[in-house]
Image 1 (cartoon, rainbow, N blue to C red):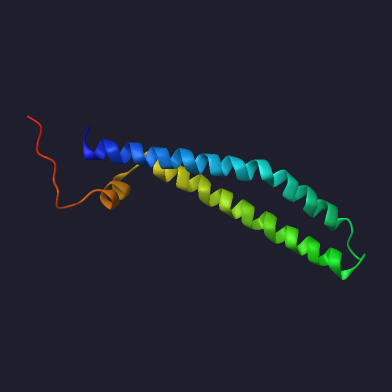
Image 2 (tube, helix red, strand yellow):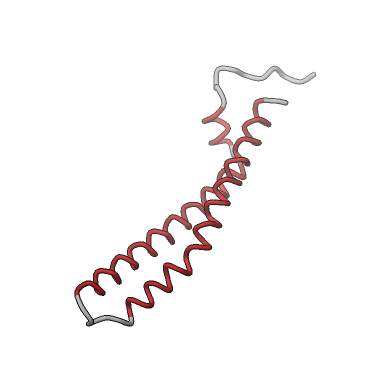
Length: 99
C-alpha cells in the first residue's frame, strides 16, 4: 500500500466519523426546534421565558452552523485531495517511480 492510499483511507475514515457526528446533530435538531417553538409561544410571560427562548435560539443556530461546517468537512475529507495529501505526506519523501 502506498502512502497516498494510506492517507486516502485515513481521510475517508475521518469523513465517516464526521458523518456520524453530523447525523447525531441531525437527530437532535428537532428537539432544539421544538423547544424553541415552545418558548416562542410563551413570550411575555416572564423574563425567564425570554431567556429560555434566546438560549434555545442560540443553541439551534450554533447546531445548524456546526452541521453546515461538518457537511463541508465530510466532503473535503472524503475527496482527500492534493491539499490533504500534502498536509499528511512528507514532501521530502518522494515515492520511487514505478517501473
